[in-house]
Length: 274
Image: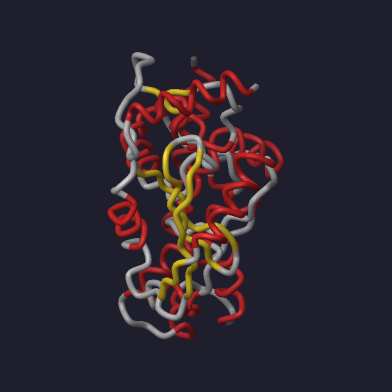
């Protein structure tokens, strides 16, 4: 218990240091020295507790800061320097890595982006998809007559984008997902925290389940279960990012954006197709 508490205190101290000094981009040795550990020991400890590296965390903080600056009206150049980056090219790389959109696209909230959207049948009713040039950006489910409501729900994530309906493309992509089991490129749009939670969802094997507290432990601390629940609820690509595999603390099915009955069907479908 003493070792656990010491490690917890060191990680908490390191996170506070990074939160205050990420703009200065301290190196691994400097961060490790701040908590009284060797660089190698600290790197292993930090990775075990947070699931990431100090560099990646600083990148995430820079990305979040730049995103806020862009939405507040700063130019891409000014947002780059505000985030401590050497050039707009570095900011571009950071945005592509974190959310598969460019800084300009993020600033415009989808303005200039062109999505194909379509509706097709799937094992769980009607699949409603948003498809960007980089890959699938959203997948939701509807009962007959509800497809336009689901489309409006998904479209609200990109309020200034252009949408063109093409059900044939949705049919083809749906076949890749549900019949062929082919890997589908994903183009995600979300905050660094949300993307970290979504990556944790991808680690839940098919046919298995996890609880919100389990996901929270993976990404930071069990105390963050409520924040994890909010990020799970914002998952834009249902089924492929398997938020349906997350259960309540008591192991029961909990609220699912596309309906608890559909969540149950998904879990049964996976169980019988394993």
